[in-house]
Image (cartoon, rainbow, N blue to C red):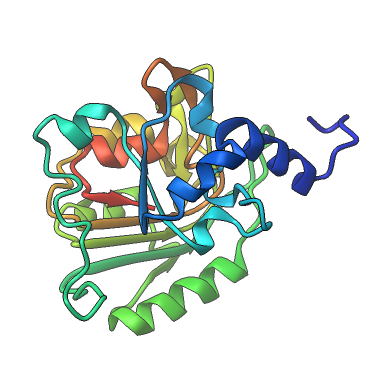
Length: 235
């Protein structure tokens, strides 16, 4: 609430007290991983930022996972089968066919202005150097190219603008070359209709990708669209 006199830290502390009572923290601290199944508007809460009684954000002490429904955890699905780390404490990660997208070339639009993102371009270049690949930048990052390469990628990393549209959540989008015009909007509806079952991880480094329309099982939006398309893990 922009009219509130509360600081962000005060608001997070109040949320933390409401959602994780002080006497419950000793239970939380026993586990290295916490799986949350949020319902309704509570799915908009940034759980990873909630401070413990000592002021440490939850993410500093616990891995936080969000499940779309209790069925993802207890219904025989395999989404969380490999949460346990390997014996050396780390997961073996390979990038056989990564796709990295950064700072697509946006166009002028009277209704919505999207500034270029030089920081996102630097970010995507840095990530690409780790993954030993070449990022799609500027005018190369078209929706047609991204969609065609995404279906064979084992890792997706997108650093761009994102927009949630709560009243029509399937129109929420990631901005690709040509956005904000329709040709450059990679919508939640388009994403969830793809077959991204080869993709183990999608990192959405863009605003509002965790937001969208509130419904009984949580949030309908861009982030959920990647899960429905078959992506194993979405950040």
